[in-house]
Image (tube, helix red, strand yellow):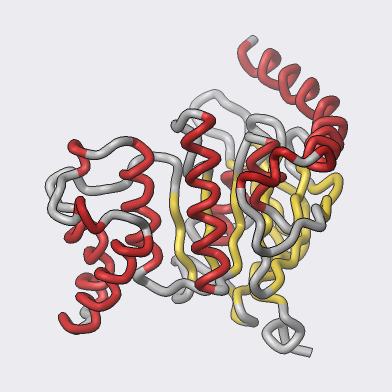
Length: 273
């Protein structure tokens, strides 16, 4: 059965990533081997200790880095070399162009692809309205808060109509309250677009709130030591954090990660020495 027919949007099979030695530094086995299937329309998060290869996992899935071994597929096609059509990526760093307005930032990818002006205007208007940026469409990034700049970056991805959205710590620089509210916006985006989402995050409560499933990674080289199913309803929002069983899931994630985080700290000290 094909990946699409079976409801699998993306599949990684026995994937590893090893960074070659350079300038007095030994080779680094950053990731794997690991295997993963992302299902159509699910919200999947990845948590793990610092340096375990979470971002490397996202890079190889997006085609931004080649695996050292193993295979990666998106909608049944092998991923090789570039971000496949139908995949959108949002990074932690503010990737908005400071010399462009909100409107022009959001339209940038469509214009680069040569989408006609009428369709570009329609998609941009929708994305700006959806992300609550209508009153700021002619503002520049320097005039916006950090949370609003991340909305611009998400809107710029949204207009490309991706079927798989990859998020690498998009709210990492925001305060806790703003992160929760941005999480609500992200859940709304996920529900209304029907896209599959994979989120990389250090925040266990954020992963818990947003996810259908959570992949827990080991210390480097990162492998999945467990995949936790949350069981939350699809129409969830940040009020979920008030429930007693919410804390139980977060506690389970920490119990899985505590030993791995201690191992990662030991790896960090060894590297510094």
